[in-house]
Length: 340
Image (cartoon, rainbow, N blue to C red; front, side, top):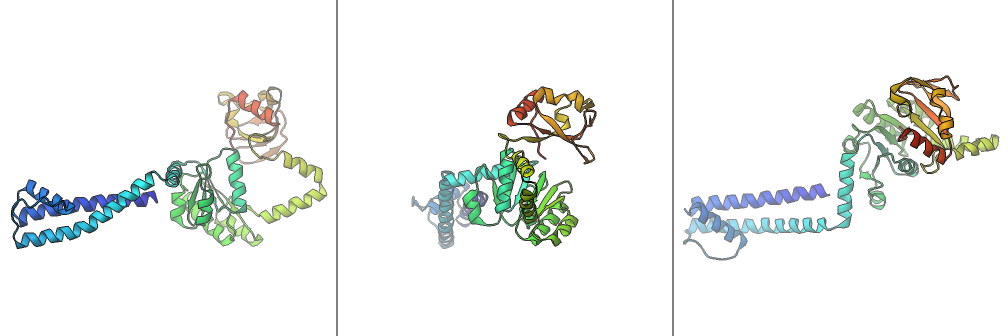
């Protein structure tokens, strides 16, 4: 909206400048005035102040003056309306907020793009917000954007299947894209477009039907999530192994204030790039946290690795601990935990 208004202001300035040039040149050659008198006549004619002519005008010059007056009425009226609209917009809190959001969107980098702000989209945004991960929501419904958009919940109105909207959302600079639209066909189209635009982008897609899973993977999705399947499996597990599931729920990632499980890049905890083992790190005695998992640079997971496991560059370790222990870990290694 602000961009459109600025374009109108530029147009108004261009029209006023053109009007002055046409008037000045016209009086110079039609009425044979000098350049100063021509400019003076143009200004008093356009503004209709009525100071009087520099010298009497012949019929041709009078017709030119009539043309200039009629033209200037429309240009002046348009310019005044645009100027008034611009002044009001500068003091409008909603437009000021909108301007801040647009500025923040243009500055986003290494962020997550969330397509759709439905039930799943809201859960994703809540989780990312809890971990202070930068994100941008693309939502097609204007009423939802008007209701939820803020600096803390940046939204871009538009259809995510439109390449122009993905570009505006910074798909080339993004770290990850999560498409959580209710229609599998829309998610498939977004995955195809996003993968073509950014080969290194991590793409996570929602799927409603089992038949869509393979199609989304072939289209370029790194992960395909079926919420209904996960929900049903979770409920069944609460019957089969209820205590285990409740325990896992309690250690799930729910925010930095109460998080119990963290994934830490190796670069954050090994000193000066030296190769170290889990025993050398001695995280347990230093922070109280326990390493319960290890991910190799090749992407292979090792559950409950032994103390001799070497921590390689580009790997990740998964640690378990209460909120205080995680805070200690952060202090000991002076790290900012990463959740890519």
